[in-house]
Length: 161
Image (tube, rainbow, N blue to C red; front, side, top):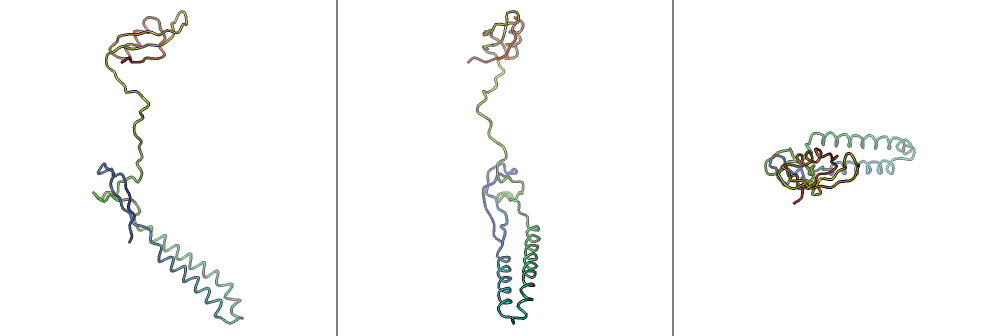
């Protein structure tokens, strides 16, 4: 039986490897359908005219029955063949044809929790004025707390580097 090959992500190898799976073979069913058409052609041209009328009515039913049988055989045969991808390196069937996870977003800034200088943006509680202040603190949470203790409602904390 023929095989399909493509690059897949193997979860066992944790690598992008070549994967294979059985290809669907439709040759037999193509030949069966062609034979059905040939039988129908011969049946309508090689019979006596009085029998041809009966054949014209029976031929579509016969063709449909043979076609349905061929389709059923194909579906049963392919139901028995495992169509999942297999890793050619380790033989595992735990592979992903498409990588289902994305790379981390580069839009976000890295999160640093160490000491540093922080810019605090917020609103003063009593006057409702916009305020921007700079604080030295051990962590961003400490900088926010220091600003809140001075009477500021903090809306943003930004590390300065």
